[in-house]
Length: 83
Image 1: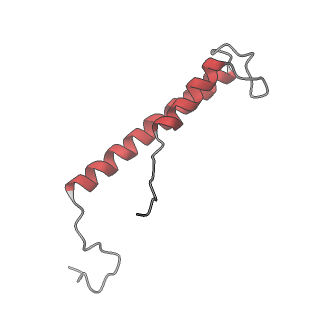
Image 2: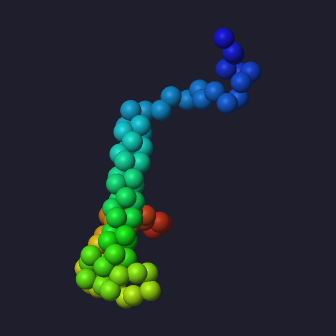
Protein backbone atom coordinates (compact mmCIF):
# COMPACT_ATOMS: atom_id res chain seq x y z
CA UNK A 1 0.00 0.00 0.00
CA UNK A 2 1.34 3.44 -0.94
CA UNK A 3 1.68 5.92 1.88
CA UNK A 4 -0.53 8.97 1.34
CA UNK A 5 2.33 11.30 2.28
CA UNK A 6 4.55 9.82 -0.43
CA UNK A 7 1.93 10.13 -3.16
CA UNK A 8 0.75 13.77 -3.45
CA UNK A 9 -1.97 12.84 -5.98
CA UNK A 10 -4.04 11.05 -3.34
CA UNK A 11 -6.83 13.27 -2.03
CA UNK A 12 -6.85 13.30 1.75
CA UNK A 13 -9.69 15.76 2.44
CA UNK A 14 -13.11 14.10 2.58
CA UNK A 15 -15.92 15.65 0.54
CA UNK A 16 -19.20 16.29 2.32
CA UNK A 17 -22.36 14.58 1.15
CA UNK A 18 -23.99 17.92 0.30
CA UNK A 19 -21.02 18.93 -1.88
CA UNK A 20 -21.19 15.59 -3.69
CA UNK A 21 -24.92 16.01 -4.26
CA UNK A 22 -24.50 19.59 -5.50
CA UNK A 23 -21.77 18.49 -7.89
CA UNK A 24 -23.84 15.59 -9.18
CA UNK A 25 -26.97 17.68 -9.83
CA UNK A 26 -24.95 20.55 -11.28
CA UNK A 27 -23.27 18.23 -13.78
CA UNK A 28 -26.54 16.49 -14.60
CA UNK A 29 -28.49 19.70 -15.22
CA UNK A 30 -25.63 21.22 -17.23
CA UNK A 31 -25.69 18.13 -19.45
CA UNK A 32 -29.47 18.28 -19.90
CA UNK A 33 -29.46 21.99 -20.77
CA UNK A 34 -26.50 21.53 -23.12
CA UNK A 35 -28.29 18.77 -25.00
CA UNK A 36 -31.49 20.85 -25.10
CA UNK A 37 -29.52 23.68 -26.70
CA UNK A 38 -27.99 21.38 -29.30
CA UNK A 39 -31.39 19.89 -30.19
CA UNK A 40 -32.90 23.40 -30.37
CA UNK A 41 -30.07 24.62 -32.60
CA UNK A 42 -30.49 21.68 -34.97
CA UNK A 43 -34.26 22.22 -35.05
CA UNK A 44 -33.70 25.89 -35.88
CA UNK A 45 -31.28 25.04 -38.69
CA UNK A 46 -33.68 22.46 -40.12
CA UNK A 47 -36.48 25.01 -40.17
CA UNK A 48 -38.66 23.20 -37.63
CA UNK A 49 -39.13 26.36 -35.53
CA UNK A 50 -40.54 28.54 -38.32
CA UNK A 51 -37.35 29.95 -39.85
CA UNK A 52 -36.20 29.26 -43.40
CA UNK A 53 -33.56 26.87 -42.03
CA UNK A 54 -29.81 26.95 -42.26
CA UNK A 55 -27.34 28.89 -40.13
CA UNK A 56 -27.54 31.98 -42.40
CA UNK A 57 -31.27 32.66 -42.02
CA UNK A 58 -32.75 34.76 -39.25
CA UNK A 59 -34.32 33.15 -36.20
CA UNK A 60 -37.98 33.39 -35.26
CA UNK A 61 -39.17 34.41 -31.82
CA UNK A 62 -39.87 30.75 -31.02
CA UNK A 63 -36.36 29.81 -32.11
CA UNK A 64 -34.79 32.51 -29.95
CA UNK A 65 -36.83 31.41 -26.92
CA UNK A 66 -35.92 27.75 -27.43
CA UNK A 67 -32.23 28.57 -27.85
CA UNK A 68 -31.89 31.04 -24.98
CA UNK A 69 -34.00 29.31 -22.31
CA UNK A 70 -31.36 26.68 -21.40
CA UNK A 71 -28.70 29.34 -20.83
CA UNK A 72 -31.08 31.42 -18.69
CA UNK A 73 -31.85 28.36 -16.54
CA UNK A 74 -28.18 27.69 -15.80
CA UNK A 75 -27.29 31.28 -14.96
CA UNK A 76 -26.38 32.03 -11.36
CA UNK A 77 -26.48 35.36 -9.62
CA UNK A 78 -23.40 36.29 -7.65
CA UNK A 79 -23.65 39.14 -5.19
CA UNK A 80 -20.38 40.94 -4.49
CA UNK A 81 -21.76 43.75 -2.36
CA UNK A 82 -19.59 44.87 0.50
CA UNK A 83 -21.20 46.17 3.65
